[in-house]
Length: 240
Image 1 (cartoon, helix red, strand yellow):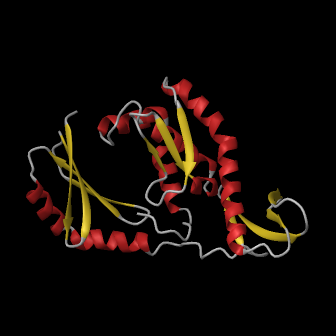
Image 2 (spheres, rainbow, N blue to C red):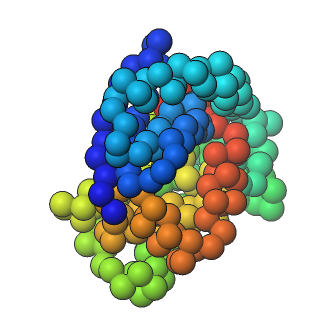
Image 3 (cartoon, rainbow, N blue to C red):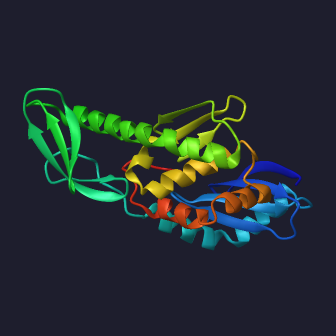
């Protein structure tokens, strides 16, 4: 399928345009913060797309406002009684101050943090970030191996980092896949969806019709998992 991409700004709103061999123009507004994407027929030009966006501007702004007012976690103080999400489950934190190695443990529905007396909130947040990364590193190798066999591709390298705009990314040139550390807070199925999504980019670079058909073949319920991922509470960081 022939495709081309462009971008423009319409009354302060950035719009991504994907020109495809399709009949009708489609405007989508996507979570978490209302990214606007237009799928447009190849015969249209940027000015025609701009006019179409202007005609739908009130609807676009309404959708963006809904996303931007979604539930967000407040700044974490890292104290006893605070709630934190682990694999989609809300857990109450209990801080235990004692000498020795600082670490986290799961105890039923509780998240235990063992730290020396006087450990700062910033240091506690750093420990939690590191623990979330450990959770992902424990689970991801098995998921990647599972889907390498299904998709008949190989993932040469992958890593974890904090990203403000994406749950994951795939560099087809280097083969590297990145996963957002925030995925450790989401239900396990959401992580698997991102694994499949990014690995499917080995087969198709663009988010076009072929990409969608591949996702539907490999993971028929991908849309519900995507919605579950984007409906989950967001961290204090601003996502775009």
